[in-house]
Length: 358
Ligand SMILES: Nc1nc2c(c(=O)[nH]1)N[C@H]1C(S)=C(S)[C@@H](COP(=O)(O)O)O[C@H]1N2
Ligand SMILES: [Mo]
Image 1 (cartoon, helix red, strand yellow):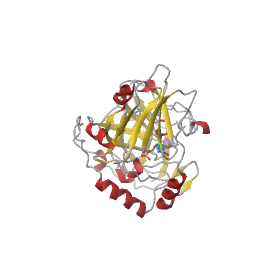
Image 2: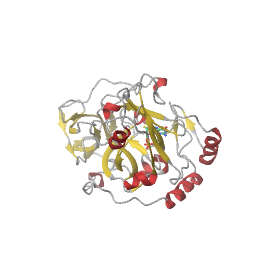
Image 3: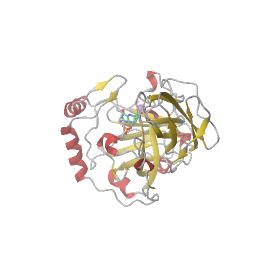
Image 4: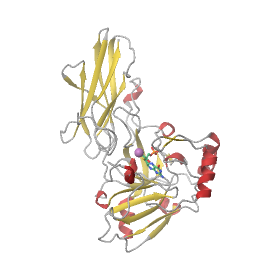
C-alpha cells in the first residue's frame, strides 16, 4: 500500500502531538504545543494565491435564524477529523513534494510552489466518513480550494493497465479509487479550506478531495504520492480490514433539532437538519411527525450537487412525547433507503428519527 514508515519520525510526531488512538483508528486532536508548531509553519507558508475560478459568494446562511441547525459551511476549527494515528505530521512546504508515478508513461513530481502556480478553483463539497452512523456528526461541508486532479493525472499519462488512483501519505495511510471516477467531476488536490490555507489537521500542505466518495477511499491528507496501479495488486489502508474497495457516499439526512431525548417548550417548533446526496444533489426532504403524513420541508440553498442542503419545518406540538423522522430525495427522484445498514462495509443507511418531549 503506502511507503514504509519512518519510525523515528513517527515516534517524534506521536510525542509532539500527545497522540491518542481510540478504537477503529479514530484520532483526536493533538495538544496545544503541536497546534502551535503547525501554526508557525503555516505562518511562513505563502498565503493563498488568487483563485482562478471563484464560486459566487456564499448566500445568507439559514442557520443564522434557526437555532441548532448546522451551518451551511462547517467551520475549519470544528470540522470533524479522522486519522489512523499520529495526528498532523509537521511538513515543511519548501521540501514537500507530490510524486505521481506507477503505471504511467510520464511520472511527475510537483512542489508546493508548482501547485500554487496552477489555476486554482473552488469546490463546495460535503465530506463524510464511512464510519458516520445515521444521524452522526462525522460529516462536514467546506469550500475547498485546489487544482484539478484529472489534469495532473492526464499529464502523467496512465497506461491502459491502470485502474486505480492510490494516494498515500508518509505516515502509512493510503486511499484508492477507480481511475474511472475522474469522469469530469471536480476532484482536486486541495491546498485551501474555507478561505484559509489547509489546516494542519486537515492535510496541510495538500490533500485529495474527490466529490462523492467517502474519505477512506479518496481524501488522503498530507498526500505525498499518487500511484497509478490496479485494485488486484494494491489497495488502500482500510480495505484489508473489511471495508469496501468501492465506496460512494450514500444519500443521507439528519435531524439537528430537536435533539434526541431533549425536552422542548410547546407551541411553534422548528425541526431542522441537513441532507446530502452526492452526484445527484438533494431535491427534496420530507419529514414525518408522530407517524403522520410525510410533509415536504423547506430547503436551504444548493451550493452544488455534492454539497449538503439544510432543511427545516415548522410544526406545532402539544405536550407529551413526540417522534420525528426524516428522509431525503435526490434529483433523480430516488428516496433515501429506509432499510438500516451498519457502517461496515460501505457506509450506514436508514432514516434518522429523534424522540423528544414537550
Ligand atoms: N493521511 C491520512 N489521510 C486521511 C486519513 C488518515 O487517517 N490519514 N483518514 C481518511 C478518512 S477515513 C477520512 S473520513 C477523511 C477525514 O478528513 P478530515 O479529517 O479532514 O475530516 O480523511 C481521510 N484522509
Ligand atoms: Mo473515514
